[in-house]
Image (tube, rainbow, N blue to C red; front, side, top):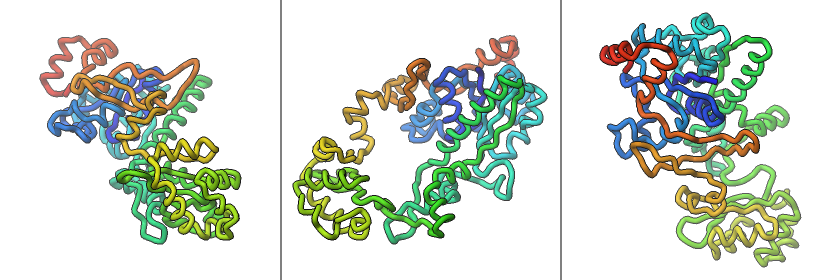
Length: 394
């Protein structure tokens, strides 16, 4: 299966990269005229488009062809590629593909069996369709940011592009459904994914609480609406923490015994989950007085041994040193021509018969121009060389 990717930022490449991990040939269309800003994100060299570690991670297994789509001849080359492809993934603003004459009505004529997935901030229709969108604005629109903050305080926001990943998973699922439909009928189709709406799908509990009980969720800090204890507790050392949660009375009693505080079991303030919720500030203080005597790993081992859910609150450095993460291969080395010591996150899926495979580094800019244009599209090499000189392949 061949996938053509038009897109920057996160959602589109994340969708395509996952497909590439499972064997699809993903060809990324980009241009030196409008370089993907993610080629520079977190890069030690902001002038070199090959050194962006984020780009390396999210574009593994993909190929790169450079086409200046502002020029009609380049758009013709894109159509030639799409004609021999199965899926197009794009996360441009809704007006862009139409302006390039590459929207679904046009491409359906080029390839009637084509599946197109468009991922945009607000979807292809509606009053916000053409408005500017970024990750933080989308998590605000979907209500997620309104849940994050200290108890009783204003929203502080997530400051992560969760909506991009939610939309990528939604798009991936929809593409699989469309491929199954095509296998049965021969029909391609168009998929419209809104990043803002995908974030709403992560709000199920809060939406149900509002529609059933009339309660509008507000920031809760580290509190859980129905479980206590539940939170982050200080440990030995500078700014080190452990996460502890007790979902049952058995786990709560085990926590009391493990911390050598059996008297908490008979304390009227903590006699049941509802009572603990009312007194969780006092309870959290007492638990913190115990955890501060141990490192996060030491406290975890004590608590997990007796069945209490507890894990260190990792930062990136401690996550790279975590024994379980190392043994399970959370991160894998993937050398890149511009960065020999690159590590990327591994694929979280473990399939016994068809496991995903990360087999090549993120592409250099235009690295596969000759392969895509000459071998796949059948354009003579001399003609491609002329197109490069004319900055159509650029």
